[in-house]
Length: 248
Image 1 (tube, rainbow, N blue to C red):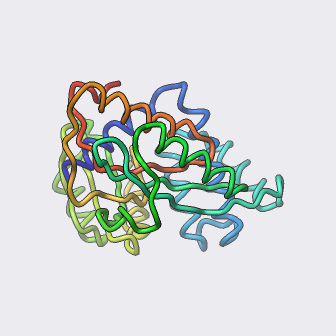
Image 2 (cartoon, rainbow, N blue to C red; image 1 turned 30 degrees about the vertical axis):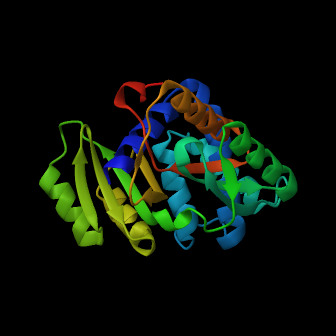
């Protein structure tokens, strides 16, 4: 779990920067659209939509922006049909990478993702080439602001069906089976807890320690390129990056 914890902390820090917010909102808007088209605009009967709304709130997406995105999708506003794809491959130093995509042009996106892998010194592989190194888990991260009763939160999470509860630095990390994520998230939300993150993630079973300035530069460049790509929704990897570089 420790490798994922470090990576989750990096992701949360990046998500809080103003420069990243616009792009994050755009990506979550796509997820909202896909969820609405799959199960309708009512989160009380569309658990996937409820989960994406929780993710949007965790990223400080304004309520009116969430509502507009849902109404637009319900009214077939832009008519765009997004396809959900997953690309897998290896980055520098053999780091395993999973890239989740929402695209309206599969061929264009595949070529661009392959180019990023290649330019970083890695390679895009076949479906399943690295996903076996990861476990799909529901991940809920709550900030430890000093006001939360740790034992009460732990019992609430476990009673709702969580598999694991781990205090990590200034956060509490809660892990669930994918099928239990919605009910655990809803139970904690009903109790008034706010989330730094609430989503289904791919958690690496083991991490790869990465050292060497050149290799680190390539990995950071690759991850930044994926993060900046309009069609990339999520990126998972098993690199254990040096702590002094986490703020970069």
